[in-house]
Amino acid sequence: MTTKPSAEMLDDDAREFVGSFAFDGDGDYTVFLSSPWDFDVLSIETQCGTGTSASLQVKIDNTAITWTDAAGTTLSCTTTADMDTPSSGGSAEVSDNFLFSVSSFSGSDLLFVNVFCRRDS
Image (tube, rainbow, N blue to C red; front, side, top):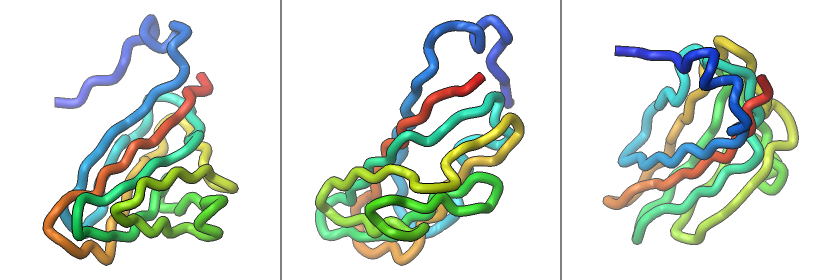
């Protein structure tokens, strides 16, 4: 069952939100299927568990976000926590799809991701 927030919920002052995710292998993982609001990705934090590494792309409607520190669209995730901010492509509109693409997953632990966003409308 899919539910969307009511207009009353969208009118409050709670504009910033964080999503926390854990992945155990390669794949495309949908975060929002048809986003209920406009939002900007403010930053992302990644870290892998012991002995694990992976690559991550964050996409809005299949267009990958370009990251400042990564100097490209692919984040290299290791056991060291890393934070990055978008340099371009980090804005989503109502009805956009928002997804993570995990690749080159190696190890038996998890990839942990926190994505920090601000709702625009």
